[in-house]
Length: 114
Length: 116
Image (cartoon, rainbow over all chains, first blue to last red; front, side, top):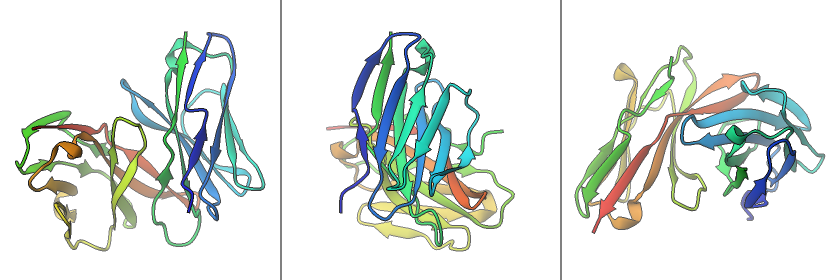
């Protein structure tokens, strides 16, 4: 059974640009969540998508957005990049309903903003 | 207020020593889940254990054991006879119900360094 796949693994962008990250969940999982990990703030929840709808949202500015497709794949977009957006972005998938068995995480996308 | 506190930022031990990673959580919910994840240098968060709030049984899995005590809101993790491969950052997480989902809130992590 394939795990959670995140692409790309590494990305270097310039301040002011925008970036799109992709996440393919485990087959059958309908919930996809995104986290930002930085040394200063730790792991912070960005948002969760379930059945193509944003179900939960963390405390991030509107520059951070996402979407989910009918096949449960999700994308995260960050517009007008700032230096502080440099981080490891982790995606996690789960069934999203019924008994909660936790999230399976991908290997992450390491974004560097210069 | 921090919902999950991992007071130990970094722990350094020598191989074969036992080590306990502490986790204290805070919640008003009666139904919640607790997790431990391991993050090796590759970055992926690897699931170790899940506990729901109604199951206070301690668990042992090989060299790993977990002690869940609701009375002290703690969910501690012990590695017996540590090995170099155990070197990683370990995260404790609390999942509470939120709009039909259980979103994990993570502690700041404990970096474990096991020296040969």
